[in-house]
Amino acid sequence: MSISLRSLILLPIWISMAHIQQGGPDEKEKTTALKDLLSRIDLDELMKKDEPPLDFPDTLEGFEYAFNEKGQLRHIKTGEPFVFNYREDLHRWNQKRYEALGEIITKYVYELLEKDCNLKKISIPVDASESEPKSFIFMSEDALTNPQKLMVLIHGSGVVRAGQWARRLIINEDLDSGTQIPFIKRAMDEGYGVIVLNPNENYIEVEKPKIHVQSSSDSSDEPAEKRERKDKVSKETKKRRDFYEKYRNPQREKEMMQLYIRENGSPEEHAVYVWDHFIAQSAAENVFFVAHSYGGLAFVELMIQREADVKSKVTAVALTDSVHNVWHQEAGKTIREWMRENCCNWVSSSEPLDTSVESMLPDCPRVSAANTSTGHGLLPGGMTCIFISEGSGLLAVLPDLHYCSFLLTRITENINR
Image (cartoon, rainbow, N blue to C red):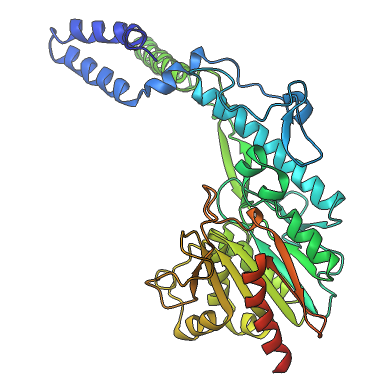
């Protein structure tokens, strides 16, 4: 926004302040009130009134985009990739447009999980009433009955939801890079049960109810002059509030409130809930976790809450750029020892593959993923899925060979116990 335009917007307020500063105490109070108003006005927010309407399509077709046979998002008419700066100098509007497209893609990935991967969508809490907020996870038909092996996928924090590693990669690269679908399909082909967590779906948003201010009762014993004065003050207050609201929210975006989902109000709560109600109830002798970024922190919290159960059921955990911290999370010595033997954290690094990377934390080994950073850190979906089989028929599944060799060792040890 140009300086002249900003000045034009604020000029009436500055003029008013200049006039009233010359007055007495009452006028100085008005000056203070105006200064307070100025301090609360964000100039970027002020300019929302010049934006086009925040009215975006609710389908890919409406955006004139579609995924091609390679899983790349392309414009239907031009074949070009997605363009973020659709309107120059309107960053906020472009961001809102991007977010609207992202919500459509989230639903699209959900559809792929059900239709292409044949996963079931399971509502949680399992005993939720009809009216309370709900979330969901996805699982394969045999997730709870497969006697040998179960894979659990946990994505990181942010806007991603079940089935995604990174929304940006889905939009700018392709579905294989940004989603968990390659993992899921290959795992199911090799006989794994699969559970896909949804740790960021912690609440639903509903519109805030409008607060109606009840007018004061017209008491017969109240002097008419006093009633008139009160009415005048009330009208002036409303006028000031409407004036500020006009600039704070010029497009009348809805004021929303969050209703948290019972026992799933955070990624950590979600991981524990899914463990208690699904993973712990599964028949699999060998459970494997693949956890990215904040998903690693959620797994460590799960271990802290359910240490004995996790140790008895989980064979190995592969972390990618995990942000867990055993000190801050107060993980005990026995947990740290178990993590050293059963977990490995592959991190973004320019060092050769599997080179040990120094860590200040006494938990699982950190090794280089050979500079496979994507801007979101190391993402499992950005690498090739390789499965290795043993004579036992048990398979390890994780991105690339070094992940698999780590899990394969853990599988063999588990079989020989």
